[in-house]
Amino acid sequence: MSDWVKYVAFFGGAVAPAMLVALIGGFVVRRFAARLGLMDQPNERKVHTTPIPLGGGLAIWAGVVSTFAALNVTVLVLQSNPALVESAPALLAEHLGGLNERMLSLWGLVAGGTVLMLLGLYDDRRGLPWQLRLAIQLLVALAVVVFYPSARLTGFIEVTWFTCLLSSLWIVGLINSFNMLDNMDASSGGIAAISSTFLALFLVTSPAVAAQPQWFVAGFLLVLVGSLLGFLFHNRPPAKLFMGDAGAYLVGYWIAIGTSLSTYTTYHSASPHAILAPLFVMAVPLYDTITVLTIRLREGRSLYEADKSHFTHRLVDLGLTKGQSVLTAFLLTATCGLCALLLRRVGPGGAFVLALVVVCVLALINILETTARRKIRE
Image (cartoon, rainbow, N blue to C red; front, side, top):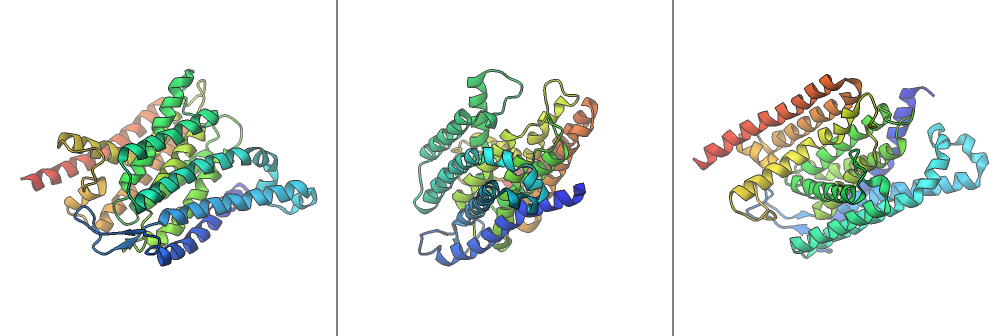
């Protein structure tokens, strides 16, 4: 099997089932959202003017869980019937043993995402104090990094307590970053799908340690991409379904775990700068979070007070339509993702130039946004 056929089969096999389940799940959630108390009512802080069903996170979760359940069943069947292995896809047959070993740990990670999805779902229905939400997010993150050492961001630092803390903060940070990004139709889901796709491409085209791609983690991310694509059918402007906190928590957690499980380089590698890949890919969510928190602090408001100071809102203030604002965010995410793909193909000087590209495009947007906000204040 040629490489391109292998890649197409892998991407399609990971994306298509999750997309189909999430697409169907979206219709189900839309039908029963009102009965479940999952309706997002418009107010002065929101851009929609009519009640919109929440609970898109349920559809995303269903796409992820059902796909891994199907994979688990397939692995068990093939393990118990060796004669069937020859008729299985070559890539699946090649990694059958490794998949079987990792299925239990995979379900542990799914359990962590499920807890966060349920937390967000309850918050969507009833509302929870931000302190409680943050505490549960942190507990789930700590549990993951303690029981799954491979899910820790090490940064070449051999201090266990520090790497556990760093990894937990990374997970909680991305959970809330994608929650903040969920402020316009298709915004959070689209950026998450683009980011996850570029991370998966990096992992299958840039082997970091072994002489083969990191298929398991790439598949882990691509299943989320499929679920997001199915959800985005319902969330595209004008949105008929929102992901809600249930979806945002799950998406942020899933991407954070995916970035933590990945190996980007080694200490003695010729390209240690490849460790910057997740920061490049996550540049837009991190930029939005940092700038929003800075604005709220400067204005003396609570960090958890919802408002219209987000990245996409500021682009609208600049004169863009909502659709153009979200598309700009997509293009910025893709630009940063392309820079990440090049990291292992350049030397230190090239990596420095790529980092400057990321910084410059974000700085350019910041300059334009700042001008628009200054005019509004005047």
